[in-house]
Length: 200
Image (cartoon, rainbow, N blue to C red; front, top):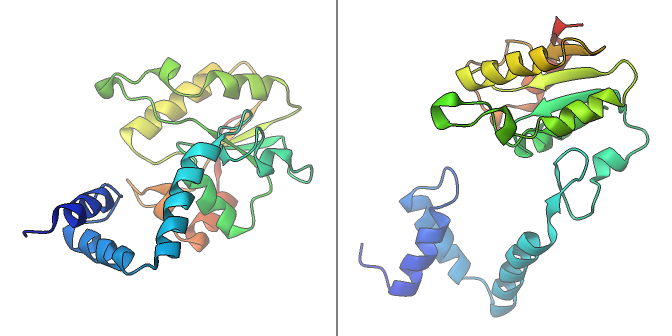
């Protein structure tokens, strides 16, 4: 398609978003062109401000606009239960269920020797530090059931085997290969309720 240059550039940026193909990117780009000048400016500012102001929580690694995220700062949360996730997107999914009252820890990746990603390349050391400061902690490993997820699960179990920590994992009712952030609320809620202990 022979788009005007500026429209083609706009379409190309929308195509960088996950799940957006050329047709969808074209529709989004054209819809953006229909914004008023004020709306276009606010849209641009929203992107710039998000990039500028959002950072990672100093405790769990979740996305926040403060040093400590709202979840870690919430005194009503059970700090002894930590749900370990691959990335912060999964936290939004769990929070939508409205049933989990623990905290989280973002690994920012999974162990994958094929991709030269080792334990030192993900956020594991701070997880160990957190666990060591807690009384009778429980880790819920909410990692996808793939080779990388299993490798990470086994490694976490190994490094914590001499510490007083209960380790459980989400129920296998989650489809094999599923991405946590794409699961519906009911599936996630049931997986949390039916989690299985793998170490104690």
